[in-house]
Figure (cartoon, rainbow, N blue to C red):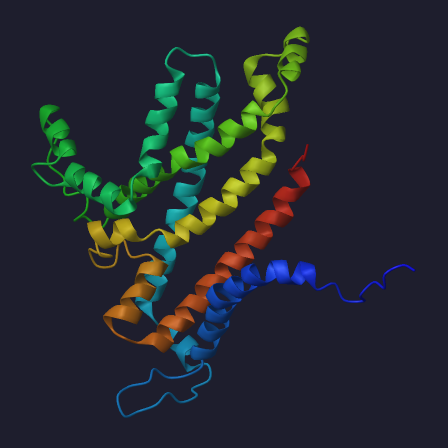
Length: 293
């Protein structure tokens, strides 16, 4: 007599239960709670939170600091994402070749990744220090005028963007290097027999095969462009005059500097919605050009 099969398999769900509990506790519940809190006022001593509807979002629309941080973050993302990915791909192509000492070269490229962002920010803070920093020493030796890189609204955002690109490029390089090593060498031999140049082999063969990796790196770079604020806290604190303030730093400032948790929740909801829309667009547009092996 055959054993009776249960209509509801319990074992797979029991195996998934720890992961589900962690996902709900640390991802889904905080997200739902943040959306809920954004429709209430911030509770104070002796004054509980009350429902205010869309009032926090109306304040957000008329908040000039929010729009400044939003524009800064858009520029930050538009510059750091393509720059970090292009540099990472170039480095991966270089260290994938048979070069003498390529192991040390890979280590040198990857080293900024393993450093904490706080340490990286302090290193670059020394570079940018007026009159005494490394960049100032170089400019003075060339006879160029002194420049306060972090104190000038026209240069401060570009200075912190350089730090982010330097930190992230080595991380993305590892993914590209792994993907390049997964491409069959017979493709290079066939392209060589057909008389294809190195550029043609890269553009026609390697780059299309790297599209799944590029899509993965793009999404991670997008998240990082709205997530990395450690260097802002250490180097500029959003100044001068909010010229380097990013959305997540502004959320941190509102939530923990002004203790306005409800308004910070509304800002967080807007940030999450923006990330979701951009990620969906990336998947829809790039998935058509992605070739999965």
